[in-house]
Length: 360
Image 1 (tube, rainbow, N blue to C red):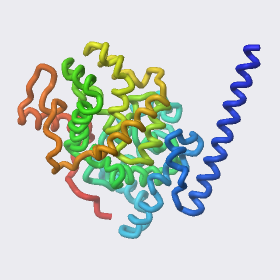
Image 2: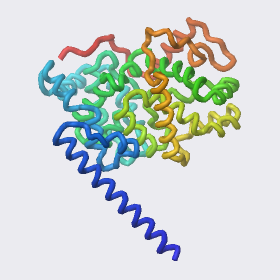
Image 3: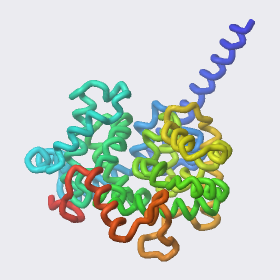
């Protein structure tokens, strides 16, 4: 009887999944036909995009066709192929890219084979982009983001333009995460302290007492939009929402994680907190509960007009513990500059001249 009940449950789940995918397929087909974003897309995105359709949905959310057309109108055709060829001849980042490609998603079946097709694609896209966006060149955090895009977009050129959308697009603005000095990362860490104090005050007080700074747990949250720091299934859900909602999701998600695990954090000492935060990606988490908390936090931040990261020239954020202090160790302005320089040197292939874009 138990087996029969389980089989019935499995059958209903399968039927529900098939029905859901049919709805998504109809919606996506209409979206591609009319080029108008469906009204029901937001609700469905928050419930999770079917795995089989991310390859169609993500390019639309990123607007890669529009970005490609705009750039080709200004700079001519075959931009990706030209950047690939230029990278072969003179990219200063090829050695670092080659090293990082072999370290990216080593446990994922698509990237396990050394010098396999997917590793080659990843190498080519990163090399080409290092020539296209000379302000950034190449930074290590870009490898995981690019690899994720390759999982759902088969064409290298599509991934190249998707990366362009993420770094240069107004909705994501990831460029400042990866350019020398990683300025947006430090702004996010500072702003996270402001939001942490306001929205999870007990957690903020406890972590501050423990000397557990955002640099220790949130650096990769922001730099890679939670890749490698959450279970992969949950990270995909976050990316569905991120590509729909934009950069607001990054700051909101950080508070959502702390709110979700508030009880655990408050009962833990600094070593236990570090262990818990460091291995979140290996834990069995309640995805729906965390996504619900993300939705709630994002709504709260929007009502308070706090969902967007303040611009660098705005005075709202004062230097916080994330940059000005470390546990039991005051850091001078001179030392702070040295820390940023060292961080930059360790996470980048090589520093390139600051330019908006290489001439095409």
